[in-house]
Each structure stands twice: as structure tokens, then as C-alpha cells.
Length: 243
Image 1: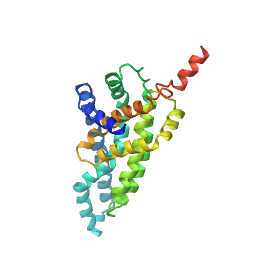
Image 2: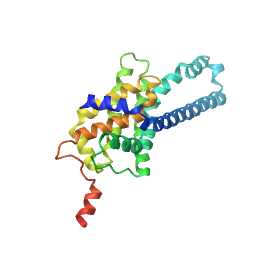
Image 3: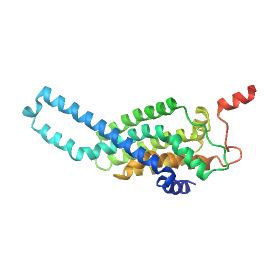
């Protein structure tokens, strides 16, 4: 089930139907990373200028050089999960509509999340991801532990966020939580695949689109059981009952 979803998502990421969304996603991801990095660099420069620490502590010059070089590479890795959450929230419905139409044409389409709600989910997860990855960054110089903490934390966070965004097109928030709990192992494994993509330089720029496509496929396969297939969202069920 998971392997099928992974290969299906990998094929679709570079398909003509998703190519335009992919380039937009990469552009937005790169732009956000550049803005965040420039902001951090500026703050660090202001700090050095105001405190004139370089004269007292020469090691700071070496640290600044580290940030400008290898530090950029490290920053891309540790910031990307949070950035990808925002980008995924923005493009999820566009990706889901394409995947559902191409791969599941006989199924009723999902209901797009309200724009504000999708962005809120993305920002909420981005904040949590940033906090977790800052803790992981503190362990960067501890071999064997740094990558492990980064990978496990992001496997859980990425699996949870992308699955909730995909399943939220069909289920209420309460039902999404229940479904994720019922299949926590599969969702965590899918999150581990997305986290592995994050670890690959350059390739990690496709994370938002790949993660969204993967979870759309995974959600479909998890709900193929007739008892779970195509459930109505709670607000839809309520309106039908009232009618």
C-alpha cells in the first residue's frame, strides 16, 4: 500500500499535469528560504555591529564565516520542513485535485479546504516544526544523534501534517484524527519517506508536492474499504440530515 503510493506520487510529481504547480512550489520554497536566510544574516550582522564582539572574541569571525558557507547548507536542511509546511498548505488542494482526477476519476472529488484554514494549518505546523528542528539543531555537533533526532521528529511531523491536509478534504477534523490514529504506523512510515526526501539536497525542493501527492494516494488506499470509502465531512452530513 505504502510502496504503491510512493511510486505513484514519484511518477506524478514530474507529470505534465503537475509540472506547473511543481515549478511554482519550488519558486515559492526557494524565495521563502532566501528571505529567511537574509533576515537571519541581517540580524546576526546587526548584533555584531552593535556589540563589536569580533574584536573581543575573534572566534566570532570564524563563526560568521561558517554561517556564510556550510551554515547555509545546514540552514536549508533544518528550515525546509517548516517552509515546506507553508508551501504544502498553499498548494495542497491544487495537487489533490489533479491526483484525484487522474488516478481516481470514478470517485467523488474532495472538498477544498478554505484558503485561510489551509494556511493556518501550514503556519501551525511550520511553527511546531521550527521549534522541534531548532532543538535538533542544538544537537548538530553530536554525531549519531543529530541526524537520528532530525529524521524521527520530521517523520512524525511531516506524516501528520501532510496526511491531515489530504484527509481533511473528505473528513471532519475529528474524523481525520481518528483515521490517523487507526493507521499511525502507516502514516509514520509515509512521513519517514518524506523526511528522507528532505535530507537529499536539491531533491528536497520537491517535498511539498511529493508529500501532498503521496498522502492523497495513501488516504485513498486507506479508505478503499467499503465501510470507510468516501466518507462525507461532518458539516455535509449535518446539512443532509437537516434537509
